[in-house]
Length: 472
Figure (tube, helix red, strand yellow):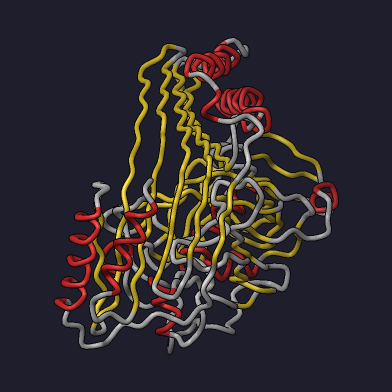
């Protein structure tokens, strides 16, 4: 990465008649490791490095990027961005919310540096995980392990005086297992993510997690029974709470979706000005406070400054059951007359920074799991999910359980095969009457926009209890 080229691109853009200009460089050194049933299927290394210019001129927004690191190219990219901004011919002129300039150089540390671990050692560790799953006493005939270590450097400068450099090592691991029991098969997928070094594998306990998943699937195929339809008490594990928080709170609170930008690609939000739900509307019980915080230490969605140079902070989306705050970049914040809350993210130098989540989760309560269960006479514990669906307004949703058990007099009973809950966002969060102290996160990749941008995030929360919800 050549910072002089980036600075030159910004200076050239500022030489035009622009209201605002920025340059953002992104360089990633990445590996791809894929094992199928213990055998190495693919290994690759790559370096992807480039920069972009974005300008506001005559109320239009122009964006241009390149992977050619020359002064001449920097000037060409700046000129292209300026021409695109002028050519947009917008009736409604775009503005960016005001912000203070920031200067920072932030880095995420590594106890075991990714670059110092040899490819052979990485492959051997993944092979060891595969062996433990294959020999756990459950028939797991198909095992796919994918690992994506990356070292990401960024440099951001803008016409307001911001200068922000960063280094972020990141690890992602995707695993898919298929368990066989007689003529039956069931699958489970797990994703692990971490901002930091190779020490992530010491924290994840991947073999134990996968052996547990294998045993759960075997037990379900052997003993799982369908659930009798009807209203019941539902206890949701942290994985279910996490996906519900992400899908039925995170996405509908994205300001660009609320304002209609995402309508052609992924729909819009049930929240909109003049509608039934807006800021201040009740959407859940008093126990429901859902936060998105990019600063969760070593989280998959970690950052200290967003890709517009805005300092990260927690966003309180639903606060004590009330719609409280939307995700904003500088463009959507200006449209609503407020400041950006640091929600602009891009996957690479050739993608525009748009409104995104980071680490979205329900705040813990004060109960233990035992206290949550003890007064449930009859109910269901949906510890994890195998399927989820939600409509394009993020209001009507459906979750299908994977590891699930009947609750009888406060104790877990027989396993239940694929119980299903179908309800609205309001009815889900309004039914919450108990929240534990536990807090667990799961890594996920959140897809959005066109061209598609898959961004790293955490989902999560405590264990919760919902009263009188319909299950089948």
